[in-house]
Length: 465
Image (cartoon, rainbow, N blue to C red; front, side, top):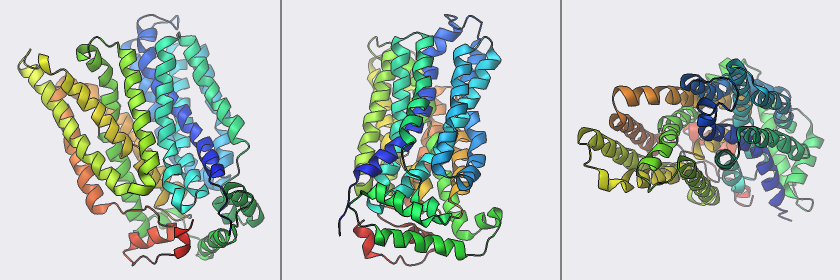
């Protein structure tokens, strides 16, 4: 039997995940343009710091409101058509950013960009896991986080060296590049099989596995699984979500997404530029941001390379331990700096080292793994909506952390604020240790058996995938 090629899977996975790069660029856009907009007046109309705070945070709010509706859309019109349908509104968002002559236009533009990016956050991980063999599912499923952090770095890079107009243009062309490439990719064979389009499903699977691959066994498994789903009595989605096995998976997916954001990653990224400027040997904030962006991309790339060898849980556990240590050290540094001014002047390396180590271990664990696990835990009949609920919790958490971090920093000080993140990292570690199942190398059926507490019956064919 010919094993075919893995290259088409990589191409399709990277293509779908390019939508994450578009969202990452929107996230990275905020940091370098803040002074251009609030101080230099590059938009030719005044924008206050508080107004810019809303410009920045409306991205996450837009992502929050779209996740659940998009879950129904991807079941209705498909994974690939949904992603392609996001391009016109994406362009509307960037046109508003390019032509804005008042603050409400900026608000609308960022909210629309957030909605489109949030939709990709549900659709792309699902598409990536459905087109992959079991052996490659972790690697290809992690492309999403890799492309998000690459997009953030892209935003930092263009923002550090170009004026606002060119930054907006270079971010606006990214969705067009996505559309050009992804137009030629196949639909998910799993989705096509669910819709009874078996011939189209076989063609899509053949393209993904290579023209010389024998897809008979895998196609048979897909058809058997979808037939099993279709034979079940049709129930309301709310009833399906209340099944014990679904509720268990949903709790795991939601808490991993919540831990991802409440670990403080966005707050630390926001605060890091000023820390580097204060104690980082004269580094400008823009250069510090680029260094941090390169660290994120490099570390996430390492995660992509090892996630199918090391497994999901071990990466979460390592991530949880080091996030605990580094946030505790950052809290200690700021607490001592405030309570005893000058006492930490010779320890400027401590927060810089802590930030870099935090980012490295976040990027190999709690960065990519929650998105991957979210797309692995659910059967096809609830996957779209369950994933959408988890995605909503992620972006709502991101919005709340962005909103609360400066308030906490002012009211209780940066030291205790970072210690709150320490406590959350400890909880994330113990939750991963005791409640998160290892999904490496397991089929959807085997994962469902694990969640239900049954003995996992290993299918030898899966090892050959």
